[in-house]
Image 1: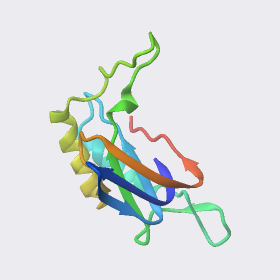
Image 2: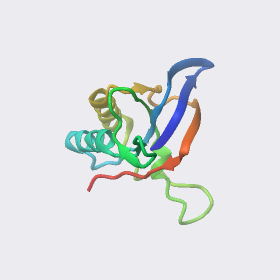
Image 3: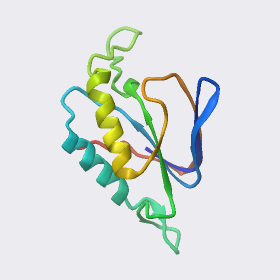
Image 4: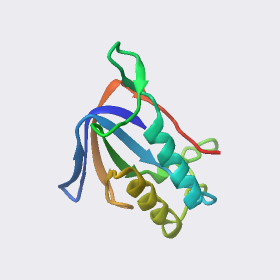
Length: 136
């Protein structure tokens, strides 16, 4: 997840989503993730206090004035510990991952990329602030 000044995603040469200030979420889903995990992760993203308050400290959550752009990202589960070609066996199959991706996006009212598509993602990282968030 990255705090951004702006972000956009294109698929097949066309802009499919863009946001102003907010969060770009690159969402990876594994085999044992559940709807409850998707809900807990969305709630955590919403509540994280990573935006500056009036004194410039990271103390504000997402709030209503900021947006979320979520992009499915199975490559987050790439394992490159052996050899030079990452293995993606930990990434969930599309039939399991897509409903959880949609659920996560719906819970955050997020704009989204195209699940499973090759996408061009552009962003201006604000800070830079980049966090890896996982739910146990």
